[in-house]
Length: 196
Image (cartoon, rainbow, N blue to C red):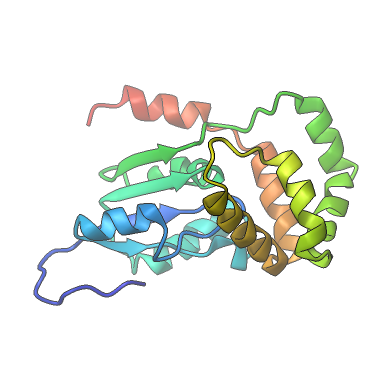
């Protein structure tokens, strides 16, 4: 966890929840922004633990040292976790980035078939064992570049591949199971209908 100037009294806390597969590190733009705004940053590395919602809640509570965050930020798949987490911290502001209440791929039945038939396991294992030179063309096919900043794209790609190689197989299965089964529509409806 980041440490800040001890002269700052009553630091606000921002809980930053990462997506798949990249963690939110100190040099992540969201981390930098909240640090500059005077927030204490709490950014747990959730893929290093058993990935069930109860375990995630426990990890977050421990990382927060039983304090309530002022802001909860969820990026991509981390936004699905943030929505559930926000129920435990009703006074925290919730910020969702590139996320929704559930995953709805264009070909949902095909996606579920891939997961339940374990074909995605081959993709995951492929990413873990293959060198970057082989993964790169595959990555480009599944993650299109928008714009012309290839250097940033390549940097993110390298970080994503590096992170995937570190994720344990059983965690990967738990993460994808969470993604397929989570539907936070009722949670978001409850949050937007309650007065704050």
